[in-house]
Image 1 (cartoon, rainbow, N blue to C red):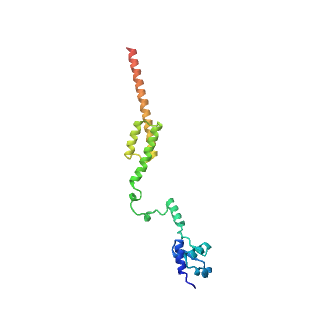
Image 2 (image 1 turned 30 degrees about the horizontal axis):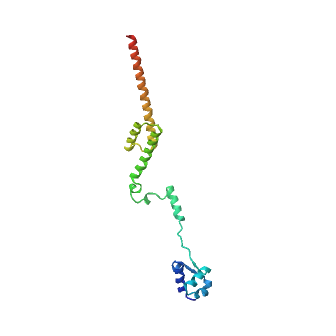
Image 3 (image 1 turned 60 degrees about the vertical axis):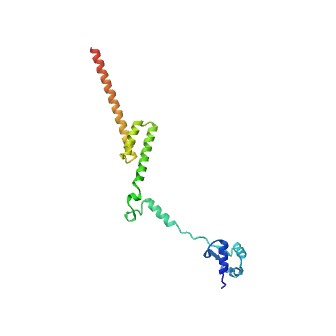
Length: 174
């Protein structure tokens, strides 16, 4: 067996890779052994007697399967957790997500004319004070407040109408 150390070193230099990435055709050993210059090695690379091996890639198939399982909620039990809940999902981050949703809703309602600026300011302050945990609860409170305001307005109108009737009756009797 002929030593091909020189050819392997030259081929690695020409191919710009390590010696372990160089493959030499076992059936062409006698031809390769003759090559003693970079130029002759280049011609053999062109002919396909010397080839650069592909990089071996680590398969991500198992990792992808595990990520999908984690997305479904598997592999997340107590034994898999390191760090406090606040370290895993900071309370501030949760607060920011929630308050942004609530404030966006209030802004949308104000711009659409569903609530006036006073009601907006009232609910904005309550949201800031951590009164509402979800969007649904805030919407329910807005509807309840609007209903109460409407009822108060009707009662006030009825009271003024009654007062006007009594005044008219008093004036007509005098």
